[in-house]
Image 1 (cartoon, rainbow, N blue to C red):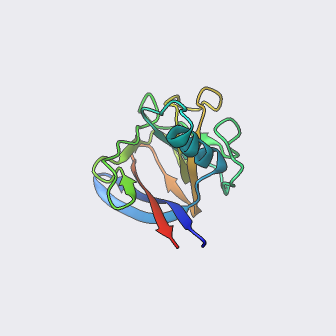
Image 2 (spheres, helix red, strand yellow):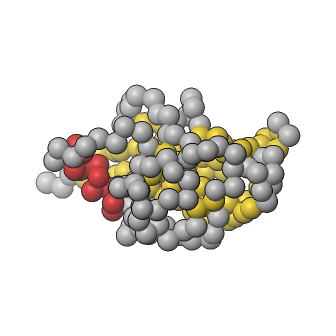
Length: 166
């Protein structure tokens, strides 16, 4: 008997300028090995639960790999937004194998001209940090850079879905 599960991080972005929806796009990407290990350790091995997860955005055209970690992400985090820390992943309760932040997307108030290529879900709130947090769960490059400028608002939604197959 073969039993399998598929885990997907489905990212959705909205780019707002002057209160007008300028662009929106979506992308499904993998969970990195560090995230899978954290999930297993927290669920089954007594590791300390992460109370709050955070979303970061990145500004270089890097395609995340399974081996990327919080300590060695491979991408360059964008910190050109007004919020003092990375926005929290404010998820609702899981339902039908999915948990998401659709009711409370992460909001980035952009304060410089940049090109944004992707986002990641991490366990620390410190902008620009790659040493304090123990985990990166998922990271996604959505395939083409999106230019943003001072005054733009970038809203990021994330759904994590686990599907069992036999």
